[in-house]
Image (cartoon, rainbow, N blue to C red):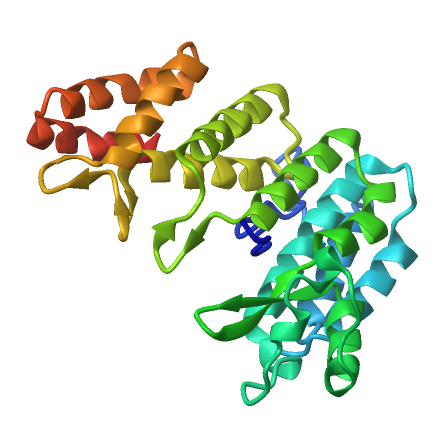
Length: 295
């Protein structure tokens, strides 16, 4: 399979926050002659404030944000840095959505730039400046159904931010990069083998169990939910239930999951649903879907 797209499913993140104690019934926003309270912004909060002021419709804002990141954060301070990188990647996602027209001309053919970071090669002369702008700001070109868009470049994230983050966050980002380079879905259809879908569900379940860093908890939960929900109901063009029976893709996926991770929480959650599907009790199985998706 050709490498496809980077999703780093990096779609919802927790912002750094802190609160002070309110003692003696006094308002923490005020001070009197006997007590003075000052609130100092953390590095992550200062960086988020800077990001909030940038233009998400301009791809060049990413380079500005990267330079500010290097001014604020120091290598080794991983508690603050992890949150800063989470916020940076979140910002890059917003720019890829709202600012792609500042780098992509809908009238031009960018197919020569697709996967150039992986396959090697050089941008053609007529696209050299465009590619330099895209690459400098941490993106690569994705093509889907003849349309071109920006994706976060995992090699950029590795080069610019891995020296600043914790080892566990590095593992997480490497996993996301791997998944998104392999691909996941196109045109509301799952395009990866059923084994890969099951393996991703279990990987994220295990990572969530073993990591509680608040900087990226929301992201890891979203990654897990994305794959777990897909394993439960599928997608519009790859449904788990077809013509009132379990589809072949999911029949194989559930059988593989039983062998691959029978003691996992994910399998235990799905087992009653799977049993009903395999017994042909489709309506009863559907009644369990809402509860499974909430899980």
